[in-house]
Length: 370
Image 1 (cartoon, rainbow, N blue to C red):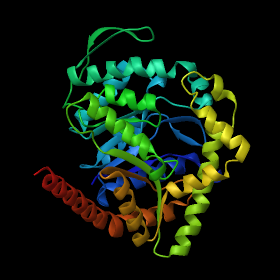
Image 2: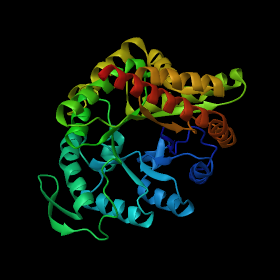
Image 3: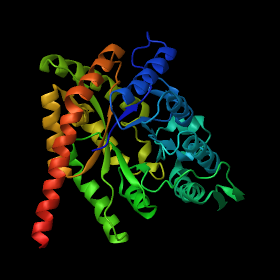
């Protein structure tokens, strides 16, 4: 069972300096290797306190130099805000430096304020993403890149340093829509989902990805990677109080940053599916969606979290887990204590239970086949 840690560089408490946000999240990232986690991830966001990690590959290079084993994931590089050649060059340089520890996660972005700041029309995000992604994969796998446009007219060039190893099996796209699932299947890349609803309400979307993969390729899809807020504390009442406090604050930041109650989605090319959600938010308020968001989080005592992970596996079967330990203004001493307790009391038991259940399912399947 793969268990990673994700960092968002958000600031809900403006009395905390931006420097302290960067310093503390980096410290937790380096600590994650000592605690036994498999991977460390960073988002890409710009311009506001919602989240500010403008170059996750640069940050991962620093973390990579401070560690020796842990995988380094971008969660993700927002392709329309970047140049395909530069993305491939940075990925391959970091992969050479860390001898194959890089995981390439990508997305296409959503917030209008970030597209405007990057001087990229938000309505071009899907076409830019779809044009750029095959170019980057070609560069990573062959060491050469070219593109005919219309957005990225790239003469054939050789990328130096060349590939350290194939990126097959270590590429993810942040996906929630059918269009994103189709793009993932087409390019043979895995799916990462930032959970905004409990998995039982999202399983149909994940099954769509799995079914499309099996119909397109002659093998099984990789497990879906779940990226979710996490808080662990030995006292159930403390865990509940802090979890809901900080999840609630982070949810409100999401609503504000992405303008989830806005009317612009109806005419925003490539994001029309968000219009129904926005209508629901405007008519019913954001409280119900906020409750779903809180229910999707993983919080409680170690025993409660283990029960939640077992429930997720009962619905999804195989999955990968990436936990976000710091969000919504949570003090970093609380986030570190939570991460340590999760690493000591949850992760080892979760791995054993997960592997046993996978093995049991395989045995039952082979018996049925016989």
